[in-house]
Length: 290
Image: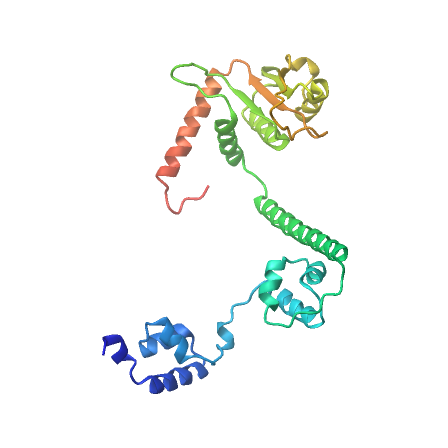
């Protein structure tokens, strides 16, 4: 007889103790520790047929959906019909109602396809609603931004998207390129914070040859408050027939290039600030919040 077998030899007595503890409201972990049962298979056998206490049931955001899905299944609805009604995925529905009897299928193939399509559309609407809720809540958490926060953010944006100096190619000048209007607005606000005069800001558009370069210049000029005279000649990207371009709709404005004249000193300040940020991250000071 092995040590494990000997340990659980009096199984019925052990089960009586386990059931009594379960009915007193103890969790599986608590019972395991009380009886020193470290084998999950044995513990499952000891507690077989005994429901867990209510306090161990963790609340689930989808509990209401699951209950409703089971009700609809008992009414004779199919997975597709339940999906249309509740807007949840069929994989979830399957897990929730797989122990219930299947309804008779009386619809045609075309009707089934239409129901499935509407079910998927309902799922997409629900997912989009969840996505927008998370984004809205995250946006509201930001609140007002201090000048220090804007300065640090601008340094990070530039180091991600701006031209950098290299030992083999000296480029101590500030040139920022991006196609995201939000990022351009933040970078322009950062230049304002640093006191970079509008006359030192020169602009250019990088755009595909199939788009309207003049319209793009007007769009970016309105966004940053720049006159047409502040724009240089657009950089045109030639079409490659082997690529399948996605940016062909009316919202495509190419990339805006922002060049700062006489910016060697500003570039050095940016690089130094970035080094400071990296150094601060490597040696965090616990308890200090800016």
